[in-house]
Every structure is written in structure tokens, then in C-alpha cells.
Length: 273
Ligand SMILES: Nc1ncnc2c1ncn2[C@@H]1O[C@H](COP(=O)(O)OP(=O)(O)O)[C@@H](O)[C@H]1O
Ligand SMILES: [Mg+2]
Image 1 (cartoon, rainbow, N blue to C red):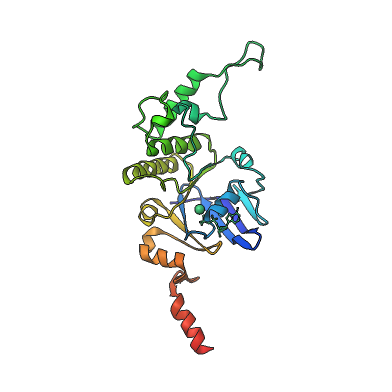
Image 2 (image 1 turned 30 degrees about the horizontal axis):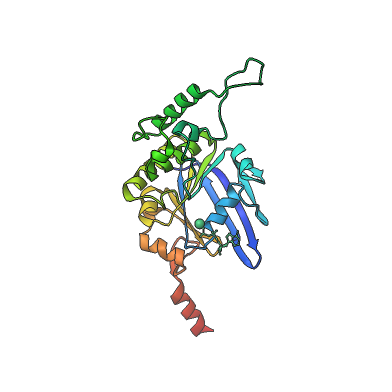
């Protein structure tokens, strides 16, 4: 079902004074998959993702993109390498229209009369391309590409942010809790969008708190706890409560793939020692 490793990290560490946000974290994302990253509040999910998209520079560890070692010093470095990120907060410019948002910071210009000087924005071309992208992603609820984003619902705004990422990503898309601020129906729309991005050929990293959503959409689940990856499981192999127990530390995934009750293990060690 899933293929080659697209993005990989080993031994990432990030300290903020006495707080260790990332504590020896490993990571891998494969072609063709939606990888969910789950973990309790403060487990270090956002920090991990920031290290992968250039928003923070890890103190230790290595990252590879398509097998090549990479070092991102800024989000722009990661974007130039083909990694697009959608943040939790709705990252759109409300006073601009949909097409303007999709091309924000990457506007297209028409060839100018004086070569590259005085080149005017190619509004027509951008609108046509924006419409094509939204159609390809099945964002059918948006009627008019010239509609101001402030007149859109929360879900539609997030769809614009996600479409923008999908449009410019060449390698993968990372999303940090993209449905956190949305209702059930709107979340469903964004999940459909994520599936389509994957099916169109870009793997997706999805950070989420929402277990039913994760079980609905993820091909694999990366479980993050106390700053590092403690397990990778497939939703088909486990019940939701088992995965929650991995997240809280009540259960541990043994090397043979079996689940070990950590509380029983601790008690046994105590009585043995
Ligand atoms: N910029 C920062 N300065 C200090 N501590 C931070 C910073 N960013 C994150 N942390 C701390 O690192 C830990 C992991 O945070 P975070 O990556 O946001 O976790 P999650 O996204 O899983 O909730 C938390 O204890 C958090 O308080
Ligand atoms: Mg977070």
C-alpha cells in the first residue's frame, strides 16, 4: 500500500532551557500514505513537525528527504525543497479573495514590456489556475474564485489553506491539527481533501488529537510520547483504546509487535527487585 521513505529523521533533539521538547525522536513518512502523528498535549508533536518543516533547528539529529541529507534553516528552505505546511491557526488573509490567497507570496506576473521590469500581476492566469486546483481537489462548495476569504466559513477557509499547500508542495504536505477549529461536517470536508491530496500523489503528515478521525483517514499512526516516537501502528491492527494506551504509556509496543501492560510490568519489577 505504501512505498519508499520520502521523509526520514533520526535522533532529533530540541531543548528549551530545562525543557526537552524533542528527546531523540525518529520519524518516517512513506510515499502514498497519510501518516497520523498522535500524542498527548506537550508530547512534542508540534516541535517535531517544526523541525521537519524548518520552523525550528534541532540541537541534534539528522533529516533526509528522498534519501538525501537536508538541513533546513527556515520554513522557506523546506518550502523550496518541496515541503508545504498548514498550521493549526487558519493561515489565510481574510481581506483577499480566494485566488489571491492561493498565490499569496508566490504571485505570477506577465512578461513585462521592459523585460523583467514593470511586470504586472497575471490575475487572469492565477484565477484560472486557482479554479483548476480547487476543482482537482474537489472543493465544490466554493462558488467564486474572486470571493473574499472573510466571507467563507471556517471549513472553507481551511480548505483554501490546504489547497494552497497542495498546490505548491512537490514532496509532501504537513498539517498540524487542521480540523481543530472546525465542526463535524467541515472536518469531513477537510478529511476528504486530505485523501484526495494523497491519492493525487503527495504523502501527508497529519497531526491530530481526534482518534476517530485518525482511524478514519490514517494509513499508519506514529505515536509520540515524552518527546519521542514510541510506536508506529496500522489502524486496522489495533483498537482505538489500545492506541490511546500507547499514547498515555499504559501500554508499550514490544519488538515482536505485541502490546505489553506497563503497569503490570512496573509492579512485577518492583516485587522482583
Ligand atoms: N518555544 C518554546 N519555548 C519553551 N518551551 C517550549 C517551546 N515550544 C514547545 N515547548 C515545550 O516543549 C514541549 C512540547 O511542546 P509541543 O511540541 O508544543 O507539544 P504538542 O504539540 O505535542 O502539544 C512542551 O512542554 C512545551 O511547553
Ligand atoms: Mg501542538
